[in-house]
Image (cartoon, rainbow, N blue to C red; front, side, top):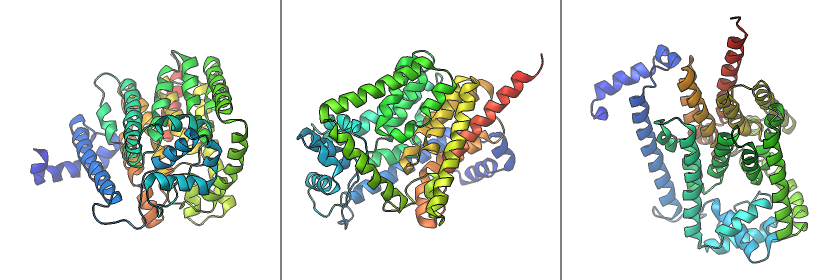
Length: 416
């Protein structure tokens, strides 16, 4: 086996890290990527297993005890099933419900930041026992995401490689909803040019993270995708109407009041600034003032909006349009935790299609490999060394897309 020969491994490493190989992407052969993927998958699986065992006290009792973020969703759904949906936005009462499900009053609070539309989904999962619900949630959202990636990539594409994407492991371990977001985004982009009404509706289903939808109108309006925009707006209206019908109009007032508390939590670091991977959080990690941090976030969001609007307005190839939207979403959103970079897997999948069609350009493969690793280490590096690398991941992917979009324009402008 390749790993049984240290001399060969050393030679491969020297070649991989040579400047020429990094520039041309010659290091990224199918066999080398497959071996690196296997190694990364085993490493990530080991880390996830160790964290899971530690969480459940295999190495000794945790003080305080820990759980998954999914317990927050489950508790919210359980309250809604008992006819007490408004209590979801009372932190003390929601915390009591979380601790009751966990069975230990020492459990730290797991916040519920989501708008009332998310309760419709949480209620369904809260009908099952907690561990069964958690398993179905993780398996179902992971299957959705990987199915989207498999359909994006050409036949025989390395879709299994995407099972090593670090954010997938973060999301599975925490029971978060980033896989659902990426899966809906993936299928929306797949259907955008064939079934635009359905594509717009799928994008609207991400309304449980409304800040992730900031650039959807920019893309659809710039690209004059009127059926998709119609499906997007209509589905948002239907979701709002259904939520109001189920929980009453007062639920929106409670959520509106709750958003002030959410803003303070992220503004002043009640959730440490090393967890989010936004330009705002990066500025705060580096000691910037609140105003400076907001300015940094506004610049990032504006740059992302300009890039998406430009690519969609000029009707660039669908691979570039879709990759731009997927990469720009977490760059523009004001609240993005480390696992929320999962949509970058959709962006990279679309870029892989474009690279296979037109060939690789200098540094592209190395940049995308760096992004892959950044998605895994951004949070630990920020926590340990106060070096906020997270915003670089979506920015680098979007930069690759914009560079390719510019090249397409230059090619088209050359006289025949």
